[in-house]
Image (cartoon, rainbow, N blue to C red; front, top):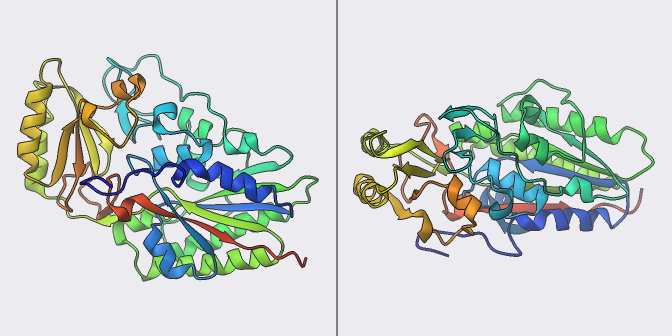
Length: 360
């Protein structure tokens, strides 16, 4: 723990996921169904998934999808895969990008920095056929999603995309049934993206989300009874927020061209600034005063929750703010639940296993 909350726990964080999945695949049987549920916290899973074996894992820093999903599929820490958040500078002097969409947010487009060529879970699954149902991920192009799914065949989603949890789960079930109904000569490793996150940002863990998760568990148990190993895990949880317009104005007064080389980057409840050379201390002091106790503001060199390799250091801004209250100014102030910081609700995520039947 730190004064801001929970930190990634070696051996029990998302880096453990590839080993856990491959171990399950090695048990034999028809194969493994992996439900990758975006936004599901440890606490919410514990309330609704009553028939699963649950293990608590910690997310990455920041606790955000771009970083966490890549760690979970490659087993690599941020210092190796270099995806330090959703929006960051690719390199010193480079543009600010959105790594998920590949869009350039600020600065001059230039030579793109690829995601390092790390080995994925799917490439390691020797003797199995790996299939990914990306659903919303299928709308993306670029190095991030290509790295995330490398080594797997892509199966298009069968139902229209939706934010309604009651409509989401039938679509996921149809995708799984379509994949497991195909005759195969090898065991199947099926990884299905379940985008609960879009709903949770607006509504939190409400009745619609929880009842949909309960229905999903019913299907997971049924697949296990049919001889499939069924696993599920998440990238992060979410907390209620109420972004304060006054704090947002104070942030904007520091995030200006006279003080910073680029607009700030980050991921939800963790944001950073790129001070001009020689302005680092001034920016840090002014931002700490502006946040007025609603964030822990520190120099990047003081971070103790991520390994500051040289390439991580040039991607992060020199001044980092980690939210410590719901009023923290968000990149999107319309959201009612958000993530990225170090609270237990954001950092603790489930790894679930439904025990398969051998009587098939």
